[in-house]
Length: 242
Length: 218
Length: 61
Image 1 (cartoon, rainbow over the protein chains, first blue to last red):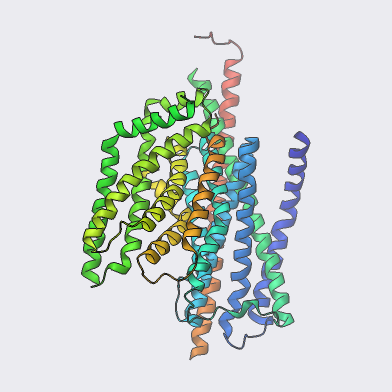
Image 2 (image 1 turned 180 degrees about the vertical axis):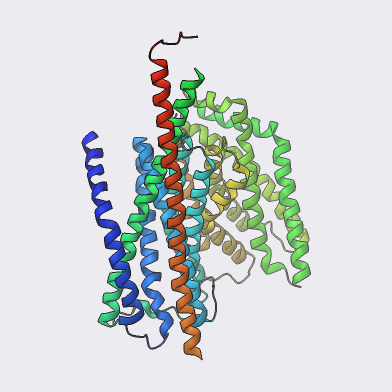
């Protein structure tokens, strides 16, 4: 156990050397690539350039939610509160990026579809995802930092949420595909994407992915610090009260 | 008598003793159906297509509020901790509460179906619809009971519970509204909604039984 | 005309995205700084209490 946490600390030290520069450079390259290098999409025009932040954002959010699920299992299994901090950090970043996906998607949808919002299957499931993890954060924020029962409750809720996602996807697809919408979804899945677009998209994956990992690390550290502070305060109060 | 039976009977007795709480859940559901019926009647002439949505949002909210209450007394009196220390398996404790909650909710829902039959002039007491309501209630109540147990000691739980439960219940809501619509010959598509509802009910019941012991472990 | 509209939405999308990230980072930085300060203060408090208590151990109540 000690060697594992030692190894984790070493990796953590490396992250500080690697993540900020990598995400910084990749994000710069992504902005230039998305706005200058990538060709203009013929059907949707300039606004299609939002793809390079919209699509990587939702993938980063999915990654973050996967981390939440794994960390929550470890919280229940090992009762290690450090993983509770990781789960909270990842959930915050997941909610942030889901929110950014919804926001950029709405701004993309207005000129292309003619509406900011529609109860399409994918939009609905993304919104439900946002709501589930926002509720998770809310529940966690309502409880005391050191409340282990609340941490386990949140972990159970996160696992429920993760296992609910397939059901949500399934149900909204059944619900919507039976009522075809006049709106054609963006042709993002088009395999005949020009190589420049693909390259910029790959850089965007790298940049936003590294940014999300870095933000998760920062946030988890903040949560862990908050726990340590609360524990220290409890000790100090007991000491001075005695 | 087996301990499992004893726990279920204890929870039913508790629910009966707390009948004022359940009556207020029933009153809430009645007021909700009346308000919906009234407010929608102001907006549109034909309220019948809205009926499945009215019923299920009412059922879900009433179930969440009532479920949140159902553990409050036990956690206040400390009997919940005593029960956890007893040799009874946590799964049995959970099942006792969930079964009592399902029975109480079914009574409330049946009353709402009768009320809506009159208000919306549509026969809602059919075998098909009762089966749908039963499956949907099992799915919703098993999940809300789990969440209510775990949040029993939390502050702000009354507001938090719907915020946590409803996003998880979206598949159930879709399946239940659509299945109810189909049984009332409203336009509802052709997907197997009752199957979706059943899958969700099994999913939530099984997961709750599995996760409850981990959640309450001291 | 339509072309111009599209640029506005593109700009708005990027602006919202980076504003979101930036605000998040600012909030995080503030939180981290406040926490680190409190940890330091508490550690000092503990150390003080320890040195004060060391010469004559307080009798247990």
